[in-house]
Image 1: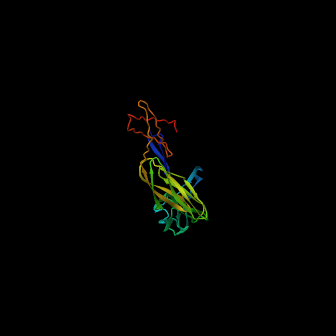
Image 2 (image 1 turned 90 degrees about the vertical axis):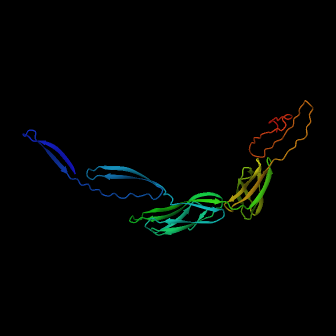
Length: 320
């Protein structure tokens, strides 16, 4: 209600007065607005919301802008497997709608396979089995989505997209090596290791080569002609003595991944004896010591002189 109050003075009665009041009873009727439509797909839309007062004719308008983003994944699935081995995992796919759905299964990972569709009753959860068969080592990330078109009841032919998806992380360990090769080499020297490759197919076989080792060098790609053999050459050039294990990995989407393990032993450098020199008493002569750097990097070498009384080291960078 709304009240109006006033004080009324009475004429001829001195200072007497009385209160004057008028009040109104107001009834407000609010009609429910139509429900706002929730965006079901990833897009940006604009609209206008108008509020009209029928009593005084005033209108309030609002510009609406909505961005429909992709929903969060239902679960994050981590799978551990090995190269050339098939691993299975089960995903629990729900149907939150009130209609039966036939979902199309989509994945951005080529190493994942499974049935192309999945039927789910309203309010039910159905298991879906995915098969993972990676062809190379490493971590692979992607997703598996279940998409369907859901018809809305009472809206004519209108429909919206239904989506449930899972984020997938595949951690793939390498398979056992085809062969273990033992390689020995002295520091500051180089040795070549030949690895045989064959291609029995009628098409050329292109292989990507990954050398896992600081002292290994070789081509990063090799092409084996059809129905032929060739040797891939990797060079071992150690700069520090000791034992270590490195690998040569060959990868191709056609044949997958295979690799060789190299058990490397870097031995101390071979002792070099300089030719005997002679010099008259009180004079001096000079000997040149050739130094070879078999690596692709600049080496900084320290020197130790066991007889500084009779020998002095001079660095002459002008000589080849």
